[in-house]
Length: 158
Image (tube, rainbow, N blue to C red; front, top):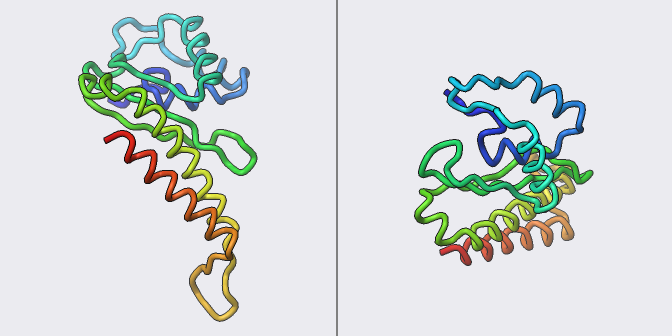
């Protein structure tokens, strides 16, 4: 069974970005059934957690959705700065806890770099005689910088 959004870090990142009315609608449809694998029993606690996620810019899961599996998730922003997706990394909790600060830093850097890559890709020009995209100099520089940021962030985790 797939976990509902409130039960996993990436889902909570997405919920945290929703307008209040849309969030309320989703929460009102969510089950409070204690027999559920992922019951939503405390909406106020979830709202507090979503506020923390909005301020911190990431969500953590220390095995609440799936025992022994930990996760950090961060939002990916569109050109207008709106959350359009989430990126996450998961690991066994024993390893995750040892590297948690580095993983948080890395996932935030990777999310930001992917956003930069996407923006650079949207600025690319199509050559008049070519059927593939040819990057212009500023877009290529942004693309290269974002790739370097991803590489640097991932090297700090190891």
